[in-house]
Length: 394
Ligand SMILES: Cc1ncc(COP(=O)(O)O)c(C=O)c1O
Image 1 (spheres, protein in one colour):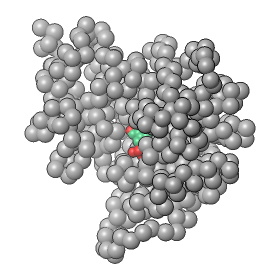
Image 2 (cartoon, rainbow, N blue to C red):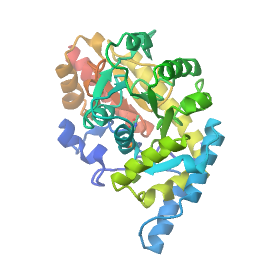
Image 3 (cartoon, rainbow, N blue to C red):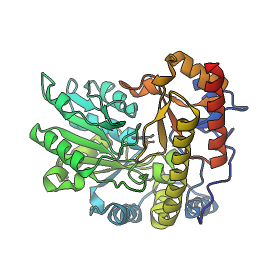
Image 4 (cartoon, rainbow, N blue to C red):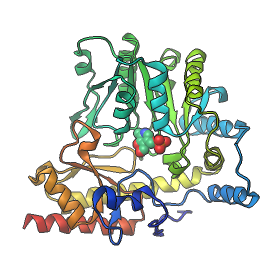
């Protein structure tokens, strides 16, 4: 392994939401708590990224950014090289992150009262993107088959009333780590095309996929599908750049793109963050090997979580993760209530984990654990979890 993922870097006191926000959010003391919630990583990005920031800092002037051509080319090359998807630079619009993008997409393509489908348990800001923009949230829960999530299109087909206008897909899925396969995506696309449902595909986790699985870009399924899909991606999950608040919305259809860009203009989004394109360009152009090493490390952490859960936490299971660094723990078998689970995790183990119910239907008695951290920190957290549940059982 060429890169170091073992060094523990103290982030307390660095204005980090994950570390400096955990006491307010979960009551877990900063003194000895471990933050394993917000989806960012405890690793520095590829060295070329911090070199690019250092060069910019040495130059010292941080005015409005312009000439995004090198950034767009880096994205085009990345999509081609890593995902086998040929895109044009002009298809890309740059937003202030993907949550921002999803809100703008609902505003641009839906009218108040329109129905928008999400598939919980799912990344919870999707709910607000629909409801804060006056649309009706249609929850079509995932179903669990052989321990993994599946989309339930039969249930969606039974929906009465007006047809939904939009479906927001999380691909790979957070939480639960499903990497939707080609057949599943084809079935979804066919379903949506037949009913004229616009598909928003949030593919922010697309690079974080484990051995044995591969990510399929929904829009790459064919020209007919591509015309009805809007793809959201970013370098932020892959390279740990979430604080740069930069995301890309990729739309091949020109009239849809114009409509989206008009909504950006209405919201006064004229420039990206100066550090977004700067860091993402460096990461995309120089980060392949770093990402390969990261994936090996994360896979080791994933396997560690699975083993400890299986051997040391009776009544707990972890959904087999095909992608993402977010373990999805099912604690139904412990017989504890959600309140007892929370007390055990926060007060006894002193860990800040995301509470399952936040992710909507299907989240009860579940916790999401972010294992993108040095292995020593993960081991420490898992030891605390095991002894907290063991003591509570006594
Ligand atoms: C599926 C998904 N979409 C979007 C985001 C956040 O994107 P951004 O920080 O660019 O708004 C996350 C972060 O965890 C996520 O899991």
